[in-house]
Length: 156
Image 1 (tube, rainbow, N blue to C red):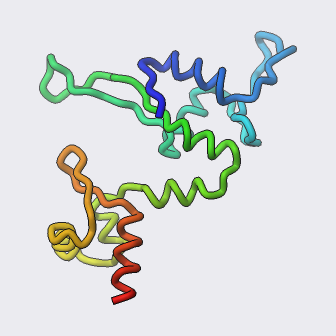
Image 2 (cartoon, rainbow, N blue to C red):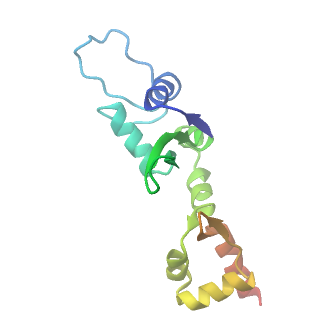
Image 3 (cartoon, helix red, strand yellow):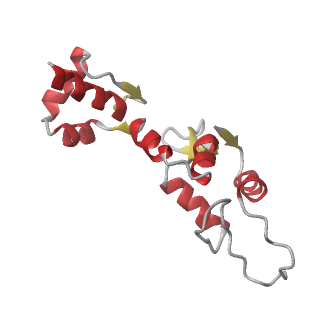
């Protein structure tokens, strides 16, 4: 994981470390097509690349509670999942499986995945049959734990 205090420092890192460096010989007014290393997809702007990183859960904006107002948040920075991004850019086929396996699901998503009612899932969580993680008062279940729960139930 990499932490950036500002969007400017994030953009500087992306330009320096993650892009193909084929800007030589391009005029100032010439339009660039930005590309990640080992990728064929072209982006018209850095902001477009950053938006895609956010959509793929590789970049997160961090906010902290404001001390002045009770229900407002101040911008605190960005967190980039650098190791996962490097694997993705290297063409690691196991990355998608890793991302899916460690993905955190809400209780409703868990209910949909297991095709069970909410009370049934809450009972399984309370009894400890399915391990849970609590993030800011909200219960989350890791996909890996759900898959192991299903395989245990198949054996029984």
